[in-house]
Amino acid sequence: MTIGIDLPPPPPPPSGGAIATPAARPDATFEAPPPRACPNCGAPIQGPYCYACGQSEKGMIRHLSAVTSDLADIVFNVDSRIFRSLRDVYFRPGFMTTEYIAGRRARYVTPFRLFFFLCVFSFLGMQMSVDMGAADRAMAGSNFDIDTAPTPEEVKRQVDEALALVNIKRKEKAGDVAQIAKLEGREAALRERADERLKELAEAQAKGETGPVPSKHNNITMFDVNGKPWDAETNPLVVGWLPDALNAKLNEAIGRTKENLRAGMKQPSRLLAGFMSLLPQTLFVMMPLFAVLLKLTYLFKRRLYMEHLLVALHSHAFIFLSLLVLLALAWIGSWAGPGSVTAGITGILSAAAWIWLFVSLFITQKRVYRQGWFFTTVKYVWVGVCYTIMLSIAITFAAIISLAVT
Image (cartoon, rainbow, N blue to C red; front, side, top):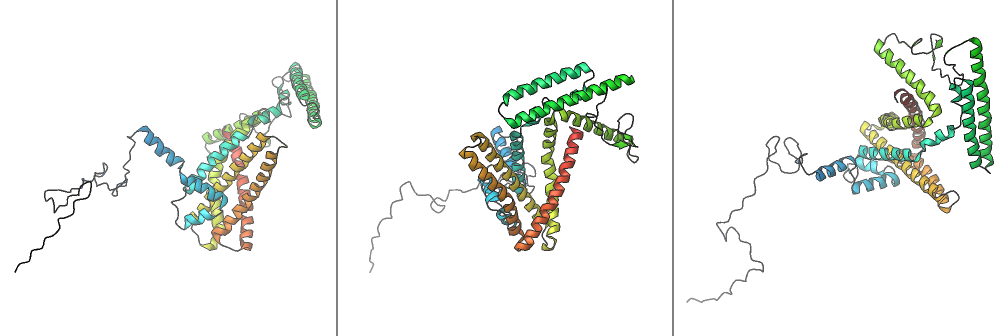
């Protein structure tokens, strides 16, 4: 006997229609698009870079806006990582360095990029904050031009002009006893130097000498060669083992240094600008040497040189960031004016920033190298003294180079 069972009809497809499967539609085909080939080696490209040759999928033949965006990212890497890196490098000493050593790097800007970024902006801030013309204005009315006056009449003319400028400043500073005293001292020095110059001219005339009369105050003698003052034409410096071309270049650099020193007496801003232009390059050279100093100091810790270089990069980045903070506080204080509440607050914050500058470097050294307080203190002082001496020598050489090449 057969029993019939009525089955309920199948449920209707969901709204929007059902997706056909190969079983329901045997004639449907599912073919993935063929992978693009690398233009350089022909291998299939599976991502933004070719796995075979490493060439990037992005080229220069694109819209200018896309290329500009990539360039800004390469140079500045301006995204959320820069703000996290700035926060941690200033407020969490040593933390970012230990994170980098542990392999957690993606959240931070690369150490060299952070160092470069802060170095550029800190020196720009220094050049904006330093009044290059202040030294020149301080030299206004000085007596260095009197030393080159060729005749007594020229001496008198220059003295009259300088004294007129001093009188103008005396009226501007009326009531300021300290400034008036300085101006009176400058006036007395002007008259004394003028009398000396007139005496030099009179002696040269009595001896029948012709040509420019040198002044003992404005005659810059670099050094002696064979017992006589150096002179590029009559008594040059000759190093026996150097070729003639290099000896000529050496004496040319010495002469340029002498002229820059003489010009710097009248316009000190030239010397200051040339010196500051070489400071970033000096720190670029000193930074890896600082890593060498750390390597020697912690020789028995058996750390790789690149770990010490990482500490050096982050430490210098922190110093540059501290400099920017101090400059910003100084600008705010000068804008508010002396004696204001804002100026008092910025003064307290500036003192705290200076203290934090040294404390943070100490904590960084202790956290990274994991030594006790006593050994960390001894090595911190040792590294600080050695690096200060090295930096002083480097800055001296930078100053000499700036005189010789600018």
